Amino acid sequence: MSKLEEIIETAEAMIRERGYNGFSFREIADAVGVKSASVHYHFPTKGDLGAVVARAYTEKFLSALGDPEAMGITPKKQIERYIEACRYAVIKQRKMCLCGMLGAEVAALPDEVARETKIFFEKNIEWLVKVYARMANVGAAGAHRRAYGAVATVEGAMILARSLKDPDAFEKAVKQIATS
Amino acid sequence: MSKLEEIIETAEAMIRERGYNGFSFREIADAVGVKSASVHYHFPTKGDLGAVVARAYTEKFLSALGDPEAMGITPKKQIERYIEACRYAVIKQRKMCLCGMLGAEVAALPDEVARETKIFFEKNIEWLVKVYARMANVGAAGAHRRAYGAVATVEGAMILARSLKDPDAFEKAVKQIATS
DNA sequence: TGTGAATTACCTATCAGTAGATAGGTAAGC
DNA sequence: GCTTACCTATCTACTGATAGGTAATTCACA
Image 1 (tube, chains in turn green, blue, cyan, purple):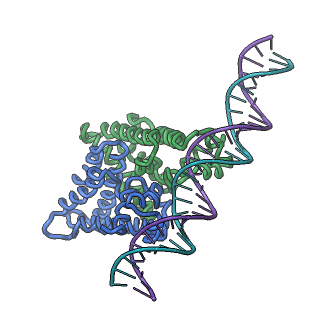
Image 2 (tube, rainbow over the protein chains, first blue to last red; image 1 turned 90 degrees about the vertical axis):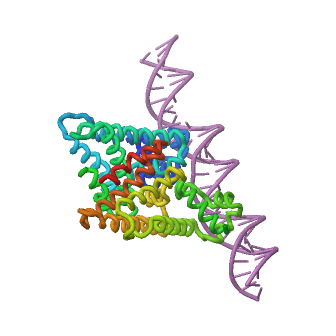
Image 3 (cartoon, rainbow over the protein chains, first blue to last red; image 1 turned 45 degrees about the vertical axis):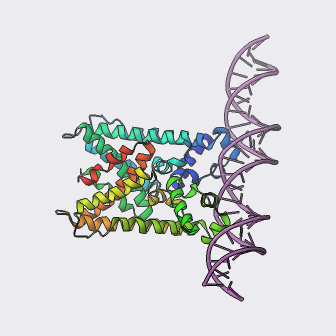
C-alpha cells in the first residue's frame, strides 16, 4: 500500500475514533512513518485531507450496499444489510461512522468537509428511499420518512453503544427499524 | 449572572456547537470577559469544566421532562414532550444535544466527562422506559427497545438536520417514533 | 538510445499561533 | 486574617503550514 493510501486510511480511523479536531498531521505522519511535511505534500490543508477521506468513505460505504433496486434481493434483506454495515463499523471496528462523527461536528468543519458530509447523508437517504419504495404498502412519503428515520436511528445507535460501552445498546436501538 | 455561571453556560454553547475539542479556555474567557487563568480558577482542568457542564445539562434536561409517571398526562403526550425538547435544541437553539456531541467524541474525552455522558443516556433511557411501560400492549422488553430506539433516533435526527442544513430532516426522522 | 528536464515523493528546519496549565500577585469582603 | 475572585506573566507542548533541499523516477526528443 502506498503512503498516500496509508495516510487516507489512518486519517479515517483517527477521525472515526476522536473526531476531526482530535487528530493532527504529526500523529498521522508518525503512524504512517513519514514526516508531517510529507502529509502536507499530499494534502496542502487539513480540509483537503478531510474532504478526500470523507469522499472515499462515502464511495466505499455505498458500494458495500450495492444496487438498491437489485431484483434478486428483498427490500427487507437490504435494510438488514444496511444495518449490518453499521453494526460492523461500531461492533467489529469499534468506531463511529465517519460521517456520523463529522455530522455532529459539522459547525466546526471547513466547508469542503461539511459538503462531503452532506453528500454522504444525501446518498444514504437516496439509497434507503429506493429500497423502501419497493416495499408493499409504502408510499413516497412513507419511504422518505422511513429512510430519514433509519439513517438517524443507526447513527444515534452508534453513539449510544459507544457512550454506554454496551454493544447491545446498538441492537436494541435498531430493532424497530427492521420490524416496522 | 455570576462569572461562574456565565462560564458554564458559554462552555455548554461552545461544546454543543463545535465539540469538546472545538473550544479553548481562552475563547470562553474572551466571551465571558475574564482571563483564561480565571477560568482555571473555577475549573482546574478542562475535564473538570466538561464534567460540570455535562452534569448541569443532564439535570436541566431531565427536569424539563418532568415526572415520567405523572398521571395527568398520557404516555403519548410525554413522548411528544421528549421530542419537543430536542426539537427546541436543534431548531430554535440551532445546536446539537450536548451529550449527543460528547457521545460521538467519547473516545477522545477525559474519563470524568465520558462518565457524565454515559449517565445522561442512562437517565434518558430510564425516563423513556417508564413512559413506554405505561402504554397499553407494551411489555418490558418492548419498552426497552422503544426507549433505546427513541434516544438513538432523536440524536441521529439532530446530526441529520445539521449536516443537511434542513430542519425538516429532523421532523421526518422522528415521525416514526410518535407513530409506532 | 542517450540525455537533460520535469515530476514525484519524500526530507530538514522553521514559523507564528494557540493549547492547557501554573506561579504568584492584588483588591475586596466577610 | 483568611477566603474569594480575579489579574499579569509565563511555561512547555503542540498546532497547521511553509520554504527549500534531495534522491529517484519518468519522459520528451535529438
